[in-house]
Structures are given as C-alpha cells and as structure tokens.
Image 1: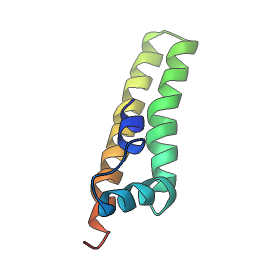
Image 2: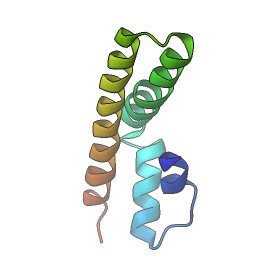
Image 3: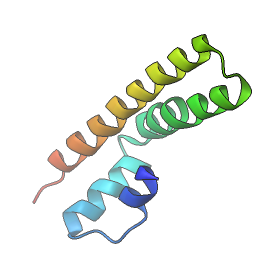
Image 4: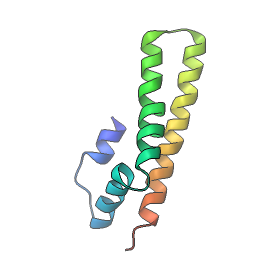
Amino acid sequence: MTLGGELGVAHASEVAARAAREITHGKYARRFWVGAVGLGHLLPIGGLLASGSAVTLVAAACLAVYGMYVYEDAFVMAPREIPN
C-alpha cells in the first residue's frame, strides 16, 4: 500500500517526479525493486502465507525491517542527487 501511494500519485513538483523516476528506473531501481519490494514485501508475505511458524514470523519481521531500511534510503538519497 505504501509503495502504491508513494509512486502511483501525481507528484507535487518536477524534482519529486524525477526523484521517483530515479528510484523506480534509475540508479536506485535495483536496490528498490529487489531490496524493498522483493525482500521487504513479497518474500515476507509469501513466507507467512506458506508457513505460520515462529521461525518464519521472525524471519519475515527481519526482512520487513530490512525492506523498510532500503525503501527509506532510496527515498532520502534520490532527491538529494536531483539538482533543484
């Protein structure tokens, strides 16, 4: 949900739109799609749906925290590289 809200809406400025493009298709794309979306969202959800064990729950929580870190890193660093 958070990803859709951040990337699926119109951006307030040209700089914000360029930063979002840089995150999804530019320098930060691989780390965003693999780290934040794949490891931070899809893998934990898939693991929890497949098995509800305590070990899976801890692993999913750790991956979700890692995904949040990668997500926040991309959304902080990308706009800093766009000239205003």
